[in-house]
Structures are given as C-alpha cells and as structure tokens.
Amino acid sequence: MIETARLRLRPWREEDRPALAAMNADPQVMRHFPATLTRAESDAFLDGMTLRIARDGYGFWAVERREAPGVIGLCGLVRILWPAIPWADPADPPVEIGWRFMAAHQRQGYAGEAARAALAHGFGPLGLKEIVAFTVPANERSWGLMERLGMRADGRFQHPRLAEGHPLREHLLYRLNAPPRPPG
Image (tube, rainbow, N blue to C red):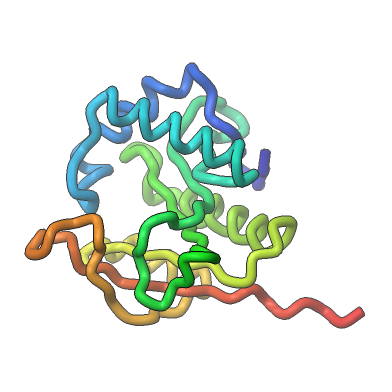
C-alpha cells in the first residue's frame, strides 16, 4: 500500500468490482480508449491487475481517498508484455505508468498525486531505471500530466493492438529516467 497526503494506492478487493465496472463503462472516462468495457470485461481486467500485482509486486492499484474509502480510480505501473514500442527489448519489457479516474474525481489533482507516488515507488523500492507512458494525441490532459511529471516526449508510434486505420492507433510516447542516486 502507498499513501499520499490525500490518497491510498492499494491492491484490489472483491468489493471494488462494481465501482471499477462503473468507471470502465463510462463513455466520458473511456473516451480515449477503443471502447467502454462490459461488466465481464471489467471483471477480467481487475483479475488481470490482481495477478500482475501478485506476480510482479506492482501493477495498476486501486486508488481511494484516505478520508473516504471507496475506489475513485486506478494508478500504477505495469510491465508491457506486448510489443508496444519499437526500441523495447522483449527480454526486458518497459514499465508503463498509467491512471484512470472516475469522472466525478477528475480535475482535482488526484491523478498527479497518485502518479507521483507510483513513480517514487518505481524509482525507489522497485529500482526501475526508466518508466514510460503513452496516450493518444487528443488526450491533452493525460500527456499534459506526463509533462508536468517531468516525462519527456519521445515521438509517436502505432499501437499494435489497434487495427490499421483505427482513429486511436497513433500514440504519443513519453519517457522518464530514474533520478541520479546520491553518491555513497
């Protein structure tokens, strides 16, 4: 579990399924994704996130406010296990940071607060050397946050999981290297 001034990033619980399903079915939340998710797809997504956290020790965690428990979004780090980025080494796949928040909890600084905590965890206890992020060019709020987090733009790529000609196929890539460690 990771805590910030206002938030808690934690593993998923069985009782989180309805809130996650509602978020994943919201067209406003999912407007920069290929589609909203059905309840079954959302449950499978939660199961996958739970498996990643158990396997890797990190993943997309449930995010809740410390003073009012209950899922308001997700944020975290995942190893990209599909060929996303041309320069990526399949033997050492890149780690992506990502976030998604319910519409009622957007524009309140929660994504930035959670993302800073996830980056600190990635570069601190996990010892990652680099973390990447990507989104579609139209998602200005997301790539704007990437820039505010100190990530640098590193070109564009065609998302291999979307068909050629799909309106969301083109993605912006951002990268952030671990800060230098103090000597000694």
